[in-house]
Length: 496
Image (cartoon, rainbow, N blue to C red; front, side):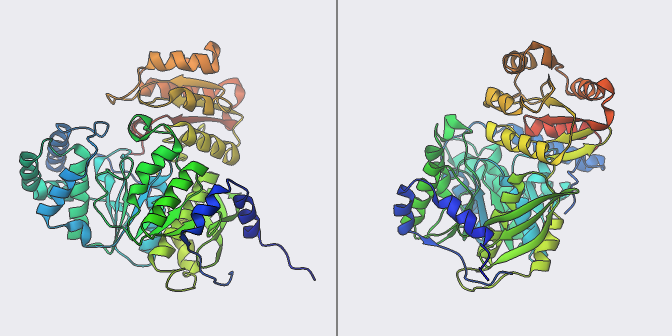
C-alpha cells in the first residue's frame, strides 16, 4: 500500500518554488524544527465608573498629550534607554517575545498571550494602538491594566521621566513614556513573560531595549513608507532590528526581498530561524460556526482540531506563527523534540479574542468591525468577509487617517462593497470626509458613494442601506479604515 502524501510536504514544495537566491542565504542560517511524531474576554474597557478615577486618568492622558504623538518620531532609542537606566532596567526582569511586522501583530500577540497563560505563566502584553481605552495597551494576565493601576504606574515613573526630559535634547514622546510604564508595570507585577509589540519599525522603536529570546516577524507590506522605506526590503531592514544575538526568529510568510533581509540578519547574529511554510505552518483549515477549525504544524509536531474563534485565513496564519513562537519560547525544537500538550493548546486558542478584527458587534443587520488601515490588511479583511459571511449586500463605512494609502485600501474593498459610506473619526489625523469621498468616487463611481462626516450618521446611513430591497436577512455592514474609527464605532454600538 502506497504511503499517503503529507499535506505539510505539499506546503513545503510550494514554498520552495521561489527565488533561488534564498537558498544561498538559508545555507548560512540555522533552521528550527524538531523531528517529533505527528500527532479570553473581548471586552475593551470604557471610561472608569468612579468619577475620581476617571478624573485621574484624564489628567494622565492630558499630560501624555503634551508630548510628541506616535506619528512624530526622532529615530533613536537614547531617550528610552536613559529612562530604563534610571528605572533600574525593569525590562530585563523577565523573558520576552518581541513582535514586529506590518499586519497581524496585535492578534498574534493576543494569541501568544493566551497560549502562555494556558500554561500557567503570568503574562504582560504591550500592544498599540488601542481600540477604545489607553489602558488596553498594557495588559496583565490577559486583561487590560486597571485604570487605577495605570494612573499609579504613571505617577511612579513620572519623576524619572522628568529627570530624563531635562537631560535630553527632546522630551520623551507619548509612546516612549507608555513603553516605560509597560516595562515597569511588568516588573512590578511581576510577570513570567512579556509579549511586546513594536510601535513602528524595529531598530529604533522604543520597545527595542529588550533582548527578546524570541523575535516574531508577521507579514511585511507597505505602510509608514515615509519613515520605514518604500520597498518590503527597506522596511524589513528596519524591522530586523528586533532580532538579537542568538535569538530564535519566527518568520511568517514574507515577500522574497523581505525574507532575504531577515535571513541575512539572522546569519549575522547567529539566530535560529523557523519559517512559515517550511518549519511550521497551517496544514488545513475549515470554516466553522463562529470561527474556523485548524490543523497546525508546529516545531514539535502536528496539532489537530484547533478551534479559533476568529475569521479569515490571515488569522489562521497568525495562529501558526503564535504557536511556533510559544514552542520556541519553551525550547521545543532546540532543546527538546516534543509537542506541547494539545488539549492546553486547544483551550488557549478557543479563548482568543481580538476586538476590532472582523468582530461582529450587532445582528439584523450584521455589523462587523475591522481595523484594516492599509491595502494588505484590507485585502485580508475582504477575503475573510467573503469566506465567512454570506452577505447578499454589504455596505462599507470607511474612515481613514490622512497619511495612509487610502486609494489602495478602497480598491481592495471595492469588489465586496455594494455601496460605501465615507466618514471621519475624531482624531486630528483623520482624513476629511469630503477629501476621502473624492477618492472613493474615483474608485466606486459617484452612484455608490455616500458622504456622512459624523460617524454616528454614517452608521445609521449604512444600516439603512443594508436593509434596502427586502434583503434584511442577508445584508451586512463593515466598518473599517482605522483603529480609531473602529473604536469609536464600537462605543456607539454599545460595546464599550
